[in-house]
Length: 97
Image (cartoon, rainbow, N blue to C red; front, side, top):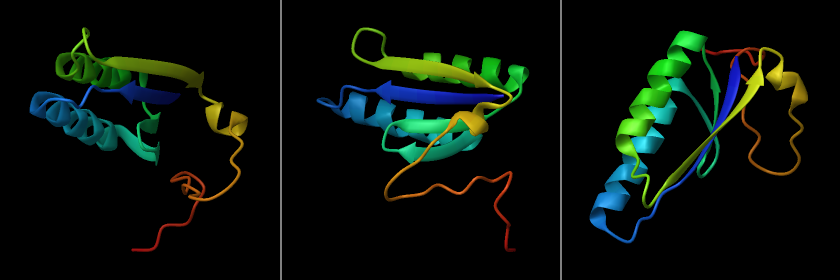
């Protein structure tokens, strides 16, 4: 299933900057960055449970926010992109090794 994850992390402290880096690294383990704080993650339901738990352990609910948009199995068909920074789709783009 395709899940869009967005986040807003307060970076006024060094702890906030660390949380921002850790959230981004965790999201990169599961998906592709499509904008600064936006990731598209193609995950199984079990992977989503683990991913959410990891992110919930990192963020500070008093200062940060996390949003999960569940786009489902056919989520890629619902995406329209215009402008710069096209993100390759790992499921349809050819891989060169």
